[in-house]
Image 1: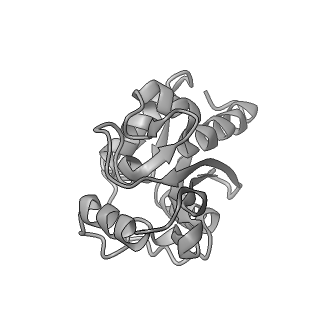
Image 2 (image 1 turned 30 degrees about the horizontal axis):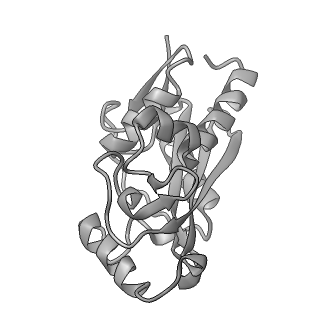
Image 3 (image 1 turned 135 degrees about the vertical axis):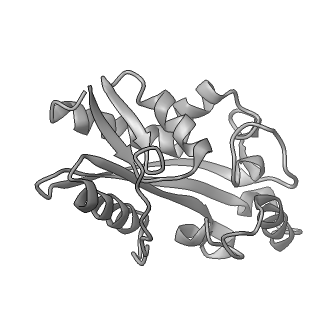
Length: 199
């Protein structure tokens, strides 16, 4: 069975990725599971650039097919913050409970119509031989007034999806994967992989 390395150490993310790519006939392993440690400087200006930097760096170490993603939350009222700095916002070791509270506090008094936001995910695939392809997915919503829900991770508890009447952290995982930014980007990437006879 062929394998694909996904350049992440985030276990919550790996769970989602495996569920979405489960019908590909490949083994999807994290960097950690592949025994790779690499300090990659993500200095791109866009989600796509950062995903490509990660995928290409690990592909060059392993000479295997590598997927990487870069994702984040864009809040329109805050000039699309935290954006590409979502994981590093307020410091990498700051808990999401603190990050989420900070964002809610910064939107105090802002009406629903101006609380628009989206999750963005760019997935890059780097192939031995140098080819790189990217796919992007987004989900639109608004920033809620409090944390809600235990599913998901990161900013999910404050990201409210009006048509579902709940936060992405309140959605069952299979429902979330259908509509999430990562789910959309990974399904596009799955088509790219299949067109190259991967899985």
